[in-house]
Image (cartoon, rainbow, N blue to C red; front, side, top):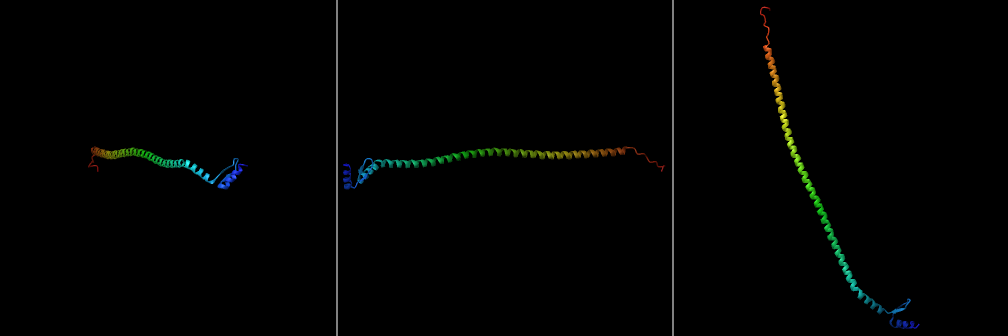
Length: 158
């Protein structure tokens, strides 16, 4: 109980708070305040520096993420441009094919028109030849009829 007595005297003199535990320790408010300030003054600068460093890292990460997103967008646009260029190249090829087909169709149309004209001329020529042959045959038949002897009419028989 000797221990209790000095604690009671110090509590009355300084107004200290005693915490009862296994080991009884009495510490006054001023000491707690000074210990807290010492603890904080020891660790707070490092914690503040760490906090500042973490904030900078977070800002740098945000900037880095934005930059990466921009780069990804550029790559996507680049791939889209490559696809677009491929489409334009393919369109040029098909356009060339269409132009060639059109030229071939024009040539075929011209040939067909010429062949039709030639066929019409040949048909007209054949009809003309057929007509001339028919006329020639009729002339020959007429000539043969004229050449055939006609019996002479008797003047006295009638």
